Image (cartoon, rainbow, N blue to C red; front, top):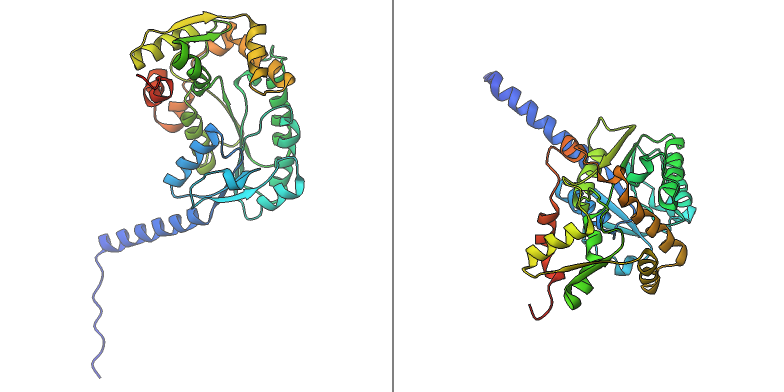
Length: 319
């Protein structure tokens, strides 16, 4: 019988095949990771889902109203009220990593429930979205106080954690869209206060990196945009972008508070929002941080770039 002949594989091809096999195993491992996103229908949560899907990650999203969540079909959507331990525990089954976003006076309770469930489920990594003001030791107003308690619960859980603290959202300018369209003006308090506002997508980009790569455990990332702007300066940028002369009218804080309540926000939450807005007069919120570029490798977007992308929401129907 003729013996089988062996043809040696060139070392270069063998090494390349080993590398490809390693990549395939890495991809296979990545596809086995399930990432839970809470606050999935908000600006940051929704942007994070887009980042994760683009990266090929499996995503499970929690919401209190799955039927109206309008999330992509490849996202597993589950109902979970973050105050309900059993619902959160069910949502946590099979999860490897968690993005924690909670809002309002219940932040301490919700963060404690999610952190405890993550620990019980042996989650490998938890990223909490906090508030930039939490890092200001002089801040005693409600929102940073709530987030400090939430951060404490996360740290005490034993789950490896990363905390992301944005100073202010560019998307908050959308609250002015109605008066810009109807009256060509922005009405806001604290007109001279400056905040280094950030695009929610840049917050989400930092969270994605912290969730999916190593080296971020135990880190606190204060994130900002590239420039500190006052409401009047943001108004000027919006006017330039939409090609319309806009006015800025500084209103009394109580008038702004009443407007918030008239939009259906509870009084205690309105008070918390106004206290946070007042901090724009302090130096802490105007500091520009290099965190976004340092963590993601990409500079944060400017307010002008954000405004260009959202210009249609500020233009009147007749424009």
